[in-house]
Structures are given as C-alpha cells and as structure tokens.
Image (tube, rainbow, N blue to C red; front, top):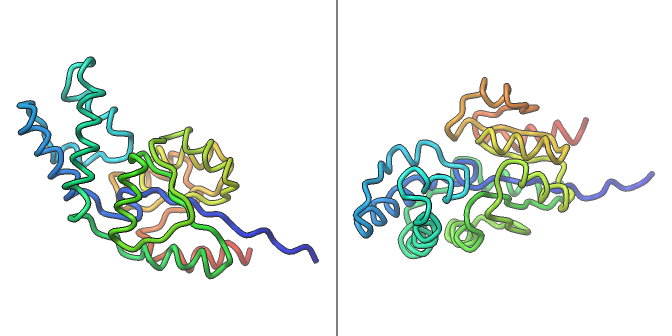
Length: 206
C-alpha cells in the first residue's frame, strides 16, 4: 500500500486563529492621532481580512496610502500584538494537524513579520508563515505549498481555497455568517475552531 503524503493545512490568521481586533483598533487610533486623520477604528475592525492598503484608501488620499500603511505596520509591531487573543480551539486545531502527521501553515493578508509576532506571542506554532496575500493570491501560495485544506473566516479565504483546489473550510468567527461563506463556495462551515479536530478526523478517514 502506498503511504499517504503528509497533509498540509493552511489557516488564515486574523479572526480565524486569533482575535486581533483590540490590537488593530488601538493601532488605528494611534495612527489617527499621529496623522490628524479621522479613522473609524470600530468600522475598520468589523471588516478585517484584506491587506492594510485596502483599508487605508478609505481614510487617506491615494498618494499617502503607502506611507500610512507602512507607519501602521511599524506601530502594530510595537503596540498591536499584546492585546491579541487566541480564538477558541486555535491551539487544538494546529495540534490536530500534527496528530495526523501534517503541516499547519498560515497564509494571511497581514504583514508577514507582524503575523510572526502574533503567533509567537500566543505560542501558536506553525511550519511556515506567508503574509501580505489575499483572495486568489492566497490560492497561489496554497498550491505552491501543496495545501489540500484551507481554513478562514473571510469570503476572500474561500476564494483562495477554491483557487488552489483545496477544501474550503469556513469559520464564523469573523465578519461573515455561515450562509455567506457557503454562498462564496465553502465546502464546510464550522462555528469556530473547536469543531475543527473532529471535522479533520472525519475528512481524513473519508
């Protein structure tokens, strides 16, 4: 019998593995105070997912977006990490992949160095971190890494999974309810990551 190759499972970061809203809100408030630009940080954290440049266009002129995004990332590294929390089931989900001899990786729209800081602070251990990608660009990374499952809270994560021909697992811990994740093409929708280990057992048994 041919041995099955180790499974690679990709996870989104913000609102999938971690609740980053407190840290992100704090940093947007700092950026607003520093630049004198009004920013509705509550609105910002209600729609996390895409890279920060896509949010900055709502608050800064086009010629200031890059500088604002770079400043945000620098402030986040200093002030945005401590307030973030691991979401329920995050550690167990990563452990479940390893129990099956697999590789958990993170594929996220967050800036890679800041994603690494978040994971280290919360002792969430993964094999690789790929940041600054969103939507179908996540699919390219997943395909390159041989990921056959991708877990995320955003419809952009579902798009990424479909682009990689990976099983798209949605979780409703982010801005999208189950119906919208299914409509976007999710193969399965979980309430949160506490349901992931049992689902993975069943998926791999099948």
